[in-house]
Length: 277
Length: 288
Image (cartoon, rainbow over all chains, first blue to last red; front, top):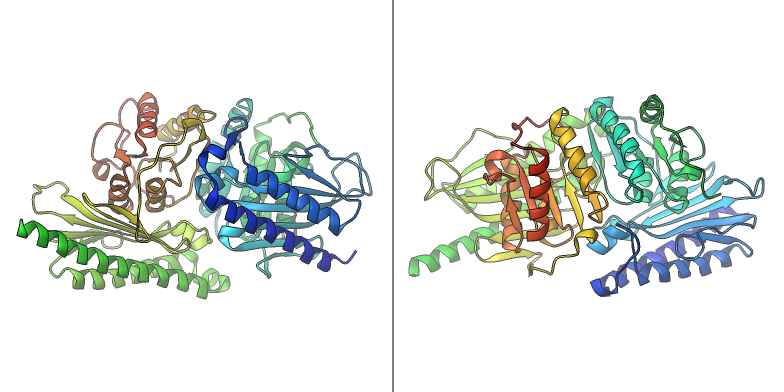
């Protein structure tokens, strides 16, 4: 497969979805927004953007499947699977904050269809930030075409980390708060920007030194995880495995990753049941 | 009557001229940040780079503001102790959200307020103009006491509040990591599931403007400085929002602030007062 050509195609589709979402935001009214679980909004725009991605991406690789939140959260089979979030940061999008994006990853499932395969291509496009992050496995991470790398802080006490509190299940909150307090004491400051894919992208280019969260879905994380890896960072779940399986993610420049990972290990939190594959 | 009209006309001219200055200093800061390569910042130490920008922005603003209102005083984050003796005093934060500025995050800005000290006896005078410019988002917020607030020249109209469970809040963590931190963890834990989302955006001046323009539904913090708040408070109030301290003090004195629509303000006031029976002592800024 010609990865560069494929990436161009994916970027074009991401830009198209981004343009659509941007124009839709202007005309959307609050009444059109339906609620789906606490704090988790979904809109017509979200679904339309997903269809746009599904159509475009399956044309790029005939026979590929698409895993996406609205239409096909459990899509399996196929040698190539797209893991997409047409609108990550929905609450920001609806509120009027600029931190939302289109996230697209391509997963190679030829080796073992029973587990998440390696992600080979990732695109995160944030229209209102006018920023697009891209990565091809083995080829580095780029922001608006320029190579970027993760960044260690000058000292731990000046580190800037991103996170989000797990809001879907209150059970997870106390484990999470334990880790959060422990980390917060040691670092410079914390941001909660409201989009996991952008938090990971901002970690890949050194805006943040690291990022951790509990309970992500694969489509929130798939592209961003590749961005961080290809920018020289480390990403696993809290127990050292592929972060897509549990969705409990620790990422960052290697030193910051180690700091957060060790703190998580000391708390002896037991992993949630494995979910999607 | 004539005097009142000329007073307002005068302030209108002052507000326009100050807005122009705030916008151009903000643009200059953005330009400088873009021009300087990552490597240069690393070499120079990031802290040095930011304080250099901060100082230079402060100098530019003071120069403009003194010219706009001759005889006025200035109180700025850079020059804490320079206080004007006359009727007018500017309260200036040349670079609010320095960490964001340095890291490349979009929420940071320039904040300028004008205080009328005509009828004050020791406390704060009346804040009559509030200006905040967010360069990355290219948004200029301007409020005049009693005359409303505008964003990029367009009047901010008060809107029907969102449902509480769909609202997005932002807050700061306290500076000291002992009891106040635990208190905030309790508040955030209690709010989770009851509101739509909770952010930490890292620029109080920006966060207040986002509340004013309905991009955020609420904001709460402690350990704030006057420079962070003076302009933003007026912008929220003049947009129809409510601003206060959980115990009814002046946020400019206590450093505590709650801003939002009436319902969110009341929700946050209750939550904070449940957790903190009395206001924790103000501690000095170490983060941000």
